[in-house]
Amino acid sequence: MRVIIAGGGTGGHLFPAIALAQELRSRFPDSSLLFVGAEGGIEASLLAKGGWDFEGIRASGLQGKGLPQRLRSLALIPWGLVRSRSILRRFFPDTVVGLGGYASAAMVLAAVLAKVPTVIHEANAFPGLANRWLGRIVDLVAIAFEGTSVFFPKTKVRVTGNPVRAELFGVNRAAATARLGLDPDQFTLLILGGSQGAHRLNQAVLEALPLLESERGRLQFLHSSGSSDLDQVQRGYLAGGHRAVVEPFFWEMAVVYAAADLCLCRAGASTVAELCALGKPSVLVPFPFASNDHQRWNAEAVVASGGARMLSDGELNGATVAEIVRSFLHDRGLMEAMGCRAKVLARPDAAACLADLVTLAACQVPSAKFKNCSKFQVPSSMLKKRSSQTWNPELGTRNCEAEPGTLN
Image 1 (cartoon, rainbow, N blue to C red):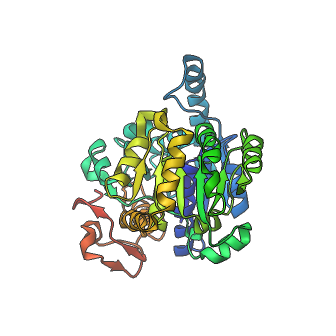
Image 2 (image 1 turned 45 degrees about the vertical axis):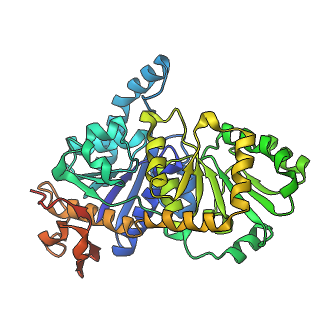
C-alpha cells in the first residue's frame, strides 16, 4: 500500500499523523508512506528522528491573520497545488490522508482533482474552515468528537477518535523521575504550551513561584517553555530555588508524562487526546485566538466529563495558578478522580480505526488503484456500530462508529 499522509505545522497535527503511520506500518510492513507538510514547520526535524520520508510544501493559514498575511497565504495556494500534483505523479499513492495543517488542504485538494481516494481527519471538536470545505468533496471523514459530525455529510463520517503515538505508553513514574533527575516523592507539575510554547502560561507560572515558596519542598516542575522564553523561565526557577526541568520542547514525552502528576496546558486536540489516553488530570487554558475558538470546544468536552478544569486566558495569572496548584497538592484524591474520568474519554483504538478507513478508501472507493484489493475487501458489517466489535482477520481491523452505509 502507498499512502501520503498530509499534515503538520504544529505538533497537534503531526503527532496523530505519526500514530497513523505507525499503525499502517505495523499492518503492512512493506507499505510506502510519505509525509507531506509545511516547509519551515516542525515536521522535518521530528520526522527525521523517526526515519520517516518527508516532502515540504510552502503554505500558511488564512484564519486569524491580518490582511497582508492573508494575501500572502492566498498567493501560495496555486504554488501549493502545483507542488502537490508533482508529488502525486512521482509517488502514485493509493490513498491521501489529510490530518490538518496548512499543507494538508493543498495536498488533499490535489488528490481529489486527480481522483485519488481521500480521507480527512478532524481532530478538534469544532473543525477548521479548510476541513469543513474539504469534507464535501473527499471520500471519507474521520472525526475525534461525536458532536463534530454535524459539520460534515452524514454518510461520509466515521467517529474514530484522535490517534495517540504508541511510544507514549509503558514508562513508569519511578524510571521517568530518575531519568529526569526529579524526586519521585514530590508533586510534579507539567507546563505545556504546545510545540511552540505559550508566553502567557510561562508568565503566569513565573508569577506563581513566589506564592508557592512554602511548598518548595513538596513541589517540582517540568516546563516546556518554547525557545523565546527559555532563558527567562530558567532564571525564574533558579531565583526561587525551585527544582525544575525546563526545555524549549520535550522530545521524550513518554518520560515527561509518566513523571507528571498534573498538567497545566493549552487545549490543542493532540494534547487533550494524550491526556485522556494516559489518564492525566489537567488544567486546560484554551488559546483564545485559535481559529473558531476550537481549543475551548476541546476543553469543554473534557471538563464536561469531570476529567479537567478549564481556566480562561483572561483568568490566567500567578495567584490563580498558585491557588489551583495548592488545591491539587493537598487533595490527591481529587486529582486521581479527575484522571480516571479523563481516561473514560480515551479511544485507545483510534489509530486502528483511522487505519481501517485508509484501507477502506484504498480498496473500495471507485477510483481505487490498490493492487491487492481482492484480498482486503471488507464486509459491510464493518461499517456498523462499534458495539459488535467485529474483528476482520484479513485486515486486522476493528469497527469504527459510523452510520450504517456503504462507500458506493
